[in-house]
Image 1 (spheres, protein in one colour):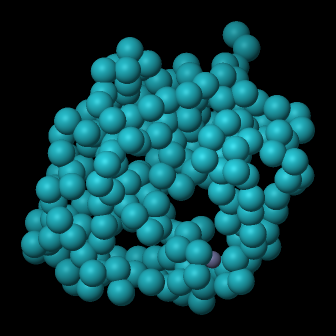
Image 2 (spheres, rainbow, N blue to C red; image 1 turned 120 degrees about the vertical axis):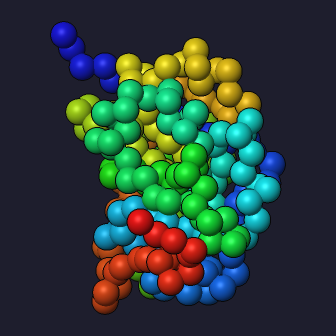
Length: 220
Ligand SMILES: [Zn+2]
């Protein structure tokens, strides 16, 4: 059977993003993400976070994101739209702690093991970050995939968005979820935003590592 190569982007419409507790955010700058563009270092896998206010995470809005470094923050019910083995294969799941440092076990950060730039036709632009030399891309609509992603990978992330092959998503379940939007993505052979090929030359930090264990009540 031919591999499915249809994709969707899944975006959160949550009105209030989560934010890191300010002392952790101060600690995270440079350790977790680039201090200039706020993109998480490429070497970081699971991202555990301590949020500033647990009330920004409500079960009925199962997909939110962390402001600043733009990592998705998802509830178990959102992850249940994908087969469990696809989640394990494609996503690094991190722990989410409340402002008091208590584990919120139904919530996770989700970082794609494979990440890509989700390009778009509307207001598209990019620059190269002065510190980490990665492209910082912006477009707010008309999304498409270029270059065509490797077909064997079923779930990617792009900042706070998911890109998923449609054969691994339960679209009926996804449709029932509040405050999210999904859109089909054309896969194109030449970019529709007139920006050509976009590549940076990543300069990694000296010792990339991330842990919040000193800030939480208990960590198993
Ligand atoms: Zn940077």
